[in-house]
Length: 212
Image (cartoon, rainbow, N blue to C red; front, side):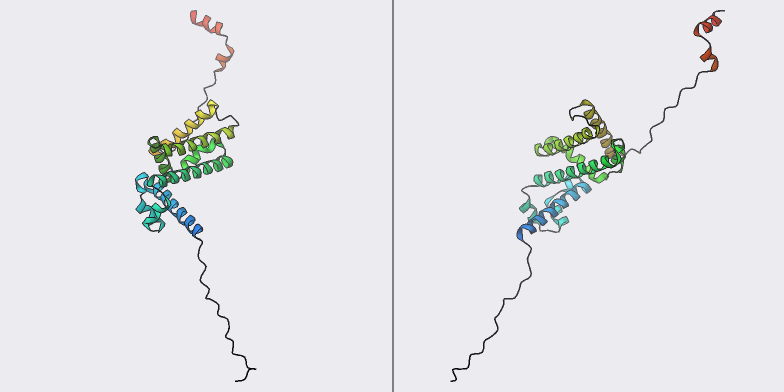
């Protein structure tokens, strides 16, 4: 045996690289966001009763068990969907007021997505029986009041701010529920100008003529 000969060395074997997997935390966040988005979509399309675990999982294209894994109950799912709707509505209203002014707010109400508004107001009314939803409903009201107060440069506690908010909310709810056609406000016609004789004749003289 020749000691000068070295055994043939085989090339080092490297383990096959596996495709990179999505981190579990990121995957969980993505799934939870998808479920919440599905709940918001169902709420705006079909209202309160349309949001079920099965319907949400089907819309999000996730297993049914995912809904109960990421949300403890249907009530939690509804509450978070309501909160997301409120934040979206406040941001949309703020942008509209910034661009068009407070006087154009009725136009924004008329142009709003009616299905989303119905879902929002339905949860608002239901909040009267649910303390968790009631907290979110108050956040919506307080947010609207502060938007009006900031625009008018008045304190949020000023009665004029609350009066304007109540008026806008009433118009808003009426439009969403009743779908009345918009009509332009009638212009007040000017009163006829007095005749030359009425302008020049003193009242005492007109009285004298009638008594003759």
